Image (cartoon, rainbow, N blue to C red; front, side):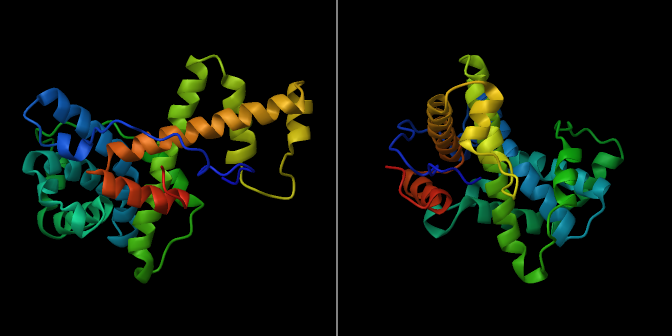
Length: 249
């Protein structure tokens, strides 16, 4: 993504606090279920790819381990020991994952034997497709690889949310412009504002306005997704600065 107007601009950011991390341990089953779905959505791709790359597991084994890891995380409360003052939650997830694979991946093998674990519907083929064009990291870069895939997953969730919102508000053209200009990889044939205006038959001022709206909403949605998977405001702001290069406020 390389918009002319930086995603980090503006001053719109979430003002309410709901954390999937704390909700994961709620006594309310509905809150626990919502928290579980939120954390799985944000972390399953980094977890799966990390298992494939670091632990060199086959596609089938990595799928089983990913499924089992999240289900056991909820069952055994893997994340209960997380302390936001001592590091990032994504680092804690990776540490829990390494320990799970090293000591408890027998739970994954139960899936193959038709155990009583409920399967989570995950699009593993999508993750595999993304790995085909990705550079495989060296052993020294695996921690950064997990972090980069976490960022990619979070941005993907925000992009999907933006598409849904634009469709719902009747502003699909804004998303179309955002996708073609900001999401397409840069290259010699990258489109210009003039190209987009000509292709869609609209004034260039409308291209500018639509892109401004889409970028503003994307930033808001990205911060909402981030806020859901951080445990407190200090962690949220720390992660937001890392993602956007500026404070969200």
